[in-house]
Image (cartoon, rainbow, N blue to C red):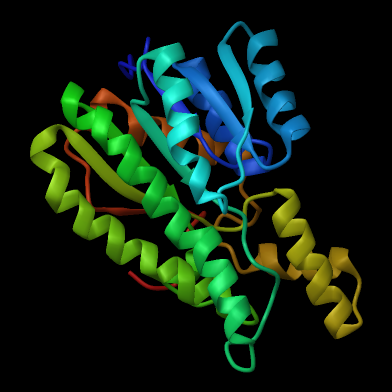
Length: 261
């Protein structure tokens, strides 16, 4: 199937990590030029380098999403180099495990700025060019916690939920401009983030990490953690011409883990 992504430019945040790197690679395989960004410049370049080695087109860019003052500067450089951003993948890191109560107000503010305000500000800037060209994709990767809140991820559950309401509202505002907006939810995908959460749970409960991971996998209907490439491929499809009638949706890539319909 031709996804119609040849020649498109994709801006992928968090591309130095497992999910972001897999998304960047999947878009590059379909012919998109990928701008891999991350606060960790070396991690972003590692992803871009792998894409180039595989025959794709990619460049890396250090981008701190919490630094809102540099959004205009970054986009001006991208527009000069590539003519604009066609596909925006919002993919932010998550806060540390926390309870929902007892967190300092300044911690809520810090993570809200990094995880929510930054995504909205970046998207607003990307929409300018998308509207001019009459085509665009805004894909925001969040967490299964927005449907079934995950214990001990209080800040994450609350803040990521706000992005779902934002994306749905935005999809109605830009649909006639040829732009789709969707949320993608990973289940338990085998990334460093999931390994970190498994390790933290093992430490809290005084157990072996392998036992925690095996117990977690047993709750997933397909019986295993997902692979990052499986997640990346789902995002690439949502970015494609073939998915032009999918917008305002929340897509689960979870192996059936989330128990609700």
